[in-house]
Image (cartoon, rainbow, N blue to C red):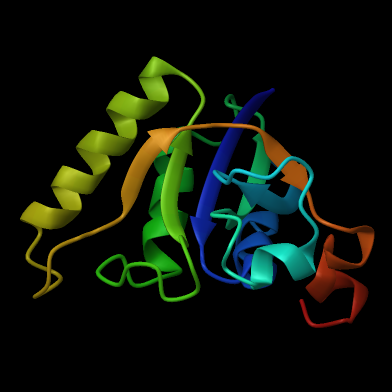
Length: 146
């Protein structure tokens, strides 16, 4: 089992997109990248903690590649807008291989000419991930929205 972490704005929709990918074994929504240990949703929403709403994805790399997860990520948000909801557009890599793959994927997107504006998605090392409160987990599924 491998792990990937992505931030692309509100984590509910991001999580729902990754849950549909064959080979994704589990997802968790939470917060990463900030200065406060164990922040609550309310604290993160103030914009003062520096955390991004993120989704941590556990996946079977024999069934789905990191490249495929990156394709999902690029297609579920506008990578030319930065910090629309706080620090919200980032790929957090867990290994050197993930960093290299993410950087190449970003360069490929930039060269594609698909966007007029620069791709501003941050690629940064994964830091402590704090799971959000239980009522946020699998939010769309719990409400019959998937």
